[in-house]
Length: 454
Image (tube, rainbow, N blue to C red):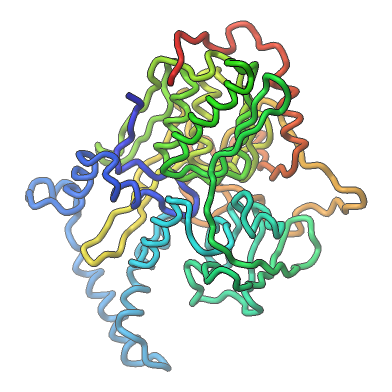
């Protein structure tokens, strides 16, 4: 059996909260029940140990402000809207990934996990000024075909600047309809418009091909419910194409924003014969867990190179860190995003949900990725286009977790020599990764395999 994280630890994602789907599917019913017992236990002792006493003075303060707004604000304010704003405000200063979701949001996250929804195919992070940062355009979707890139800022939609009433899912819509986005991009002097046509998004999270005889390529664009099983099937097909055994594999995780932690753990298990994969630590016992590989390596010890960039976040960092620390793969590319926190989706009685940061995760060597990411062993840089101006970031902050306002402080954040990563597009990084794959592996750098996972 592969290691199976509890429902409390399913989500390791930068933008969408995929854990709700996993909880509903009952991937670990015992752990899910434990989570809910902590949130709403009838045992007085348990409640006392997990829920603090209500601060009555602060409740009175809130009521006073609420009444002031209701009585004196220039326009009437709907009670429901005001209460929703208050609840969201309760979470807004915790960290960028802890948010409140209503029923419609929860439904859309559920759809994102299954990989089928109506939209343009892009992962977004809403910033404090309500604009949107592109975490990653999803492969072979309208967003990717329109040229959106990780790190782009969306400052207006259909000619309207994004304000305080911004929709949480602004780019969803009926297939065939168009949406015009105003984009700010690092290295581009002025904002520019991009028009994208919505369609039914059916995300194939795993794509493969042979780079040359004996050398396979696997692209994992996000971690969904079926990603791990698709990975296993596609690797087996590559092995068959190579006559039963691969000479090496390039695992491409560039601009992969994360997803289900379970999928990343299972893929690591497919490639590891033994060793730790990831551990998580939080304030309550159920947040503390450690996951290890089971015997058998699907590639039978064939060398692996993992390709990453600044858009590789969360679950993709878990996978890269597990393979690197176990000396199963070399990491090539640019420093990753640095999201080393675990989010849990907690369903509420009214059908809404709270996505709450509940733990930090640590690589097998015991290091936290939060705020620093994973530094590749071989650093690659984007290709400079002929005639392109070297005008830096044009005032934009580097695209990292450490630059998100209110982010959790990382254990090693601020270390000397830190440099933010870059987004690596195109096929040149794949060519460089293949060249690294062919280099002789130092003695003892990769473990031998005792068997094969089938």
